[in-house]
Length: 206
Length: 194
Image (tube, rainbow over all chains, first blue to last red; front, side, top):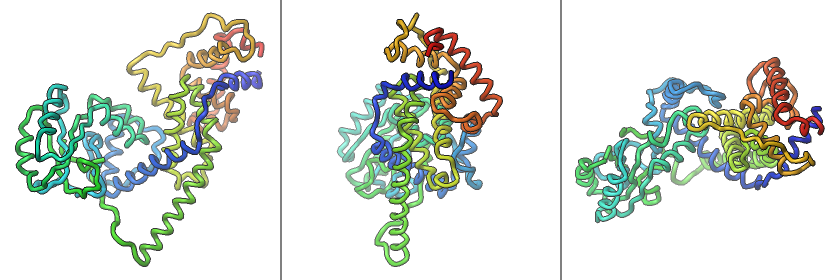
């Protein structure tokens, strides 16, 4: 009976379309490598313990691959949902002189608000480059970043993530005025500026 | 929501002396790790993907779950490469991903297994029969399905299955018996004949 069952199973998978194992390994090395680096960075920033706390709140963690890190400042789930600062940019947001800016929309932003803001930004001469990240894209990024914590990921839906514009300013000296102006616009939640080299991703986040 | 996860700046600039040899050493270690990992992926990918397919009935999703398994394993490779049963570990990661996927789906939709009325005349290798088994598997609970796939598609021992799933040996035996009985009742004679 067992041997027969085995044959059944073999037949059931006989239409396997196949996949290139070498490519799978390369993709895993690239993405898994990012995960390793991110873990090290998180541990360095002293937030890992907070993440574990956040995970414990949102649900049991099965097969957590790493033991809990020593205690550090608490990190909120909201912070975990934020994009990572690009390594080449200033760690802390700056008040003036920012080269790269992320304009986060309010949590329940509407399409009308985001498209209005998008066209204003694209027409703004101070803005050299602008990209939009919608909730779905934000969620995909979030999901990849936290792929090793499926319970955490499954507790968050795309709706809980905010839309954002990532942009590069033509002249960092204009950041202060730019920020003051956009902070009051309809649908804008917060504005975060950083100092980045030209090689950094637009917006200073990855 | 202004706080953003920040990271310490990596070491930049020219590397000299001890730092340079440390850096070369690290690169070599990475090359060795990648080679070892690639060999593991090549040996494990097909079986993992097939088991994933038996769990989810979708080759595309199966491929995705397998890839996710490898990503996680690479991220933990230094820790697991020695002293860990990689075969068992990879199944455990995969099954956790499957369980998680199932939980996420079950929140938004109810998956109803559609069983064909009768899988033709039962001739071997007809697509109907192939599908019948996979559909019947889908009618089982995800836990029972996992036991069947690990135990009977992959041929792991009861002890190994218990370790992979993190349950007791008696639970594995109980689930196997229940799952087989259900599978038999779903597939009827076509199943028992073979």
